[in-house]
Amino acid sequence: FRSDSLVAQGWPKWEWLLGPDCSSLDDLVKHLRNATAHRHIYFSSDSPNIEDVEIEVEDYRGKPPALYWHARIKAIDLRTFCLKFLDLLENEIR
Image 1 (cartoon, rainbow, N blue to C red):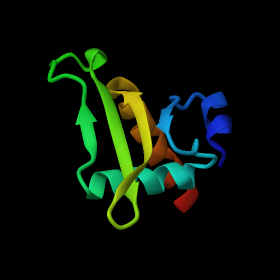
Image 2: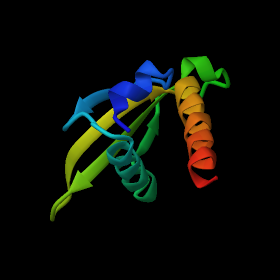
Image 3: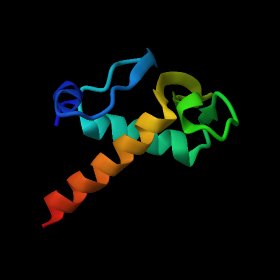
Image 4: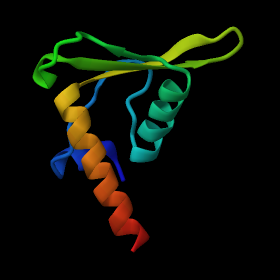
């Protein structure tokens, strides 16, 4: 799955701030996994309104770790991304 084809299918678009654009869902999930595991997730606001919040994620490499990849998505779009990802997994497993 290529990320540009996913956007064409209605998946939300990520904004790449640093590093290579993710050319596949696999690339994106790998970076998201690393960001999550190492607590490199940042919220633009603590607003209770999800439409007001953006989420930034970062992935680091090397020793000492250096910022390698950085992306942003609106919180409401991250919700959509997660639901579409779950649907994809359910359809692929069946």
